[in-house]
Image (tube, rainbow, N blue to C red; front, side):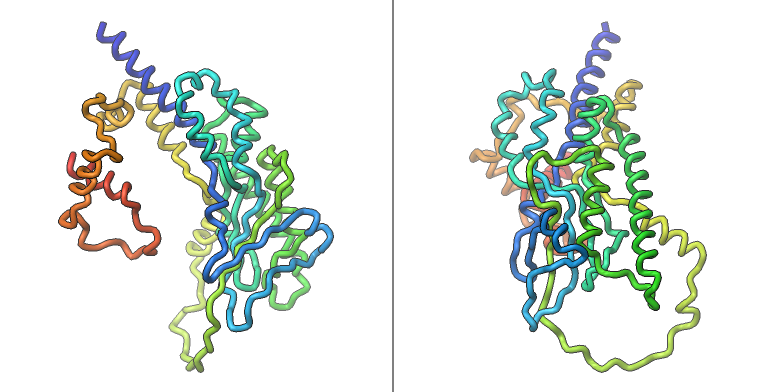
Length: 346
């Protein structure tokens, strides 16, 4: 009897983890909220027809003379998040259980997302070590071709290695074209190269938007121009120009690694699934995947919930310091509430 109960518990936990595992691939990067013109930055859109007509030229909005550009972010492969709805039929087996959430979740599919992002220097030179890609377009192409069961961390890692090779080839071609330059400095990215990168990404993912959208967006960041003070020349420290061979190899490996643009917990979920399959279920995992009894739940929008928030966020529970990170990366109120509550429980 105990074996049957344990087997049913494993099946319940695996069903939750498997659904979460598949959904994770389809979490879109929220481009619409990311590229909003404001103080110190402006955004412009690039359409395929415009880029084709302009050839190698790449026009951009004029920046006031009193401002200086500090960098660019190029967002490649724009498409609407609503295209995720096309894979809903693959989740038919579970839609009956989540029908009540359908309308609320559908609202999250408004706005645009993208394939990838790439930082550019103030001169417009691509910084390939900053290249990040979203799992979403890859997952859309993969499911249409091979179904949901083909989604895995290993499959995505293999595809990411293929993309890394494609980008290395693209970068090598750029260097060949600029080989006549004496200083061998990378040239600013041009319209033809953006078109090439967009086509490369669509072929790699096996997915292209069925709606007519810009193929890229560019965020320009700028600040007030600062007069450069007169610099005093100092002798370089000993061996400052020497590059250790091990450091060089490490630098190359960092550049070859492609970042993930959106939320990504696939590997962790797969690790949890393996442990559950083997019957090794950590208590925190079991607790996290088991709904609380209704009488133990707190609606944070209720009066009791507000009192719980006030208790959890009491000034006496604030940390006395923090890591030296950007202030806008601070936790939200609910994130801090969750952490403080977990610390209290532990």
